[in-house]
Image 1 (cartoon, one colour):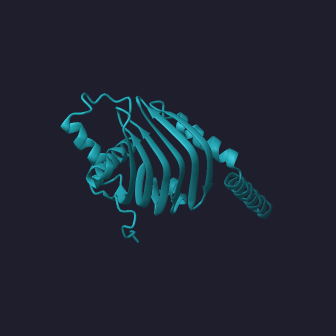
Image 2 (cartoon, rainbow, N blue to C red; image 1 turned 90 degrees about the vertical axis):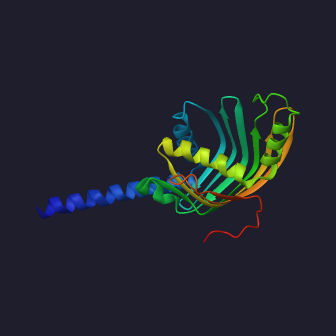
Image 3 (spheres, rainbow, N blue to C red; image 1 turned 45 degrees about the vertical axis):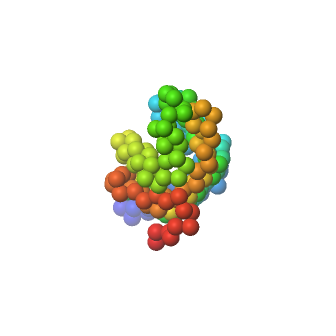
Length: 202
């Protein structure tokens, strides 16, 4: 009995060692990380994804040159970094982001039909896109609702976003906003400001 117990103990220790080794290799091998992310994105058949590079750590993820095409809408991100207790995701089912930045965002809405680009309603829309926090709170809420419907719960705080929106008619609008807090479980309780100096949520 003692030999069996010792054998099982040694086997368990060996399995733990192998698991830790694979985990360590995963975190130091960018090609494995990129392959894992691409495999997950392949399951999203409604959109087309491309990712240049991925660097995953227990408390931080960095992505460069990411692109997504959703129908006639395209989005590109030059660089994105999110930080937080990301290791909790497999256990809680919630992706918690305590801080981060998205830079070099290009949101291409140029192929969307808007009617008369000189109309007063369209001009009002351009103004809202350029600096209306409530407009972006609505957009973030819609994104979170879609994520929640797909089974991913997301809680974001202190996320800075910068880039441009390409509107129909060749209009390019620079954008810079700060997501103070957003939660997929409460998509209507979202705080966004166009002021990047907004106090951070602690």
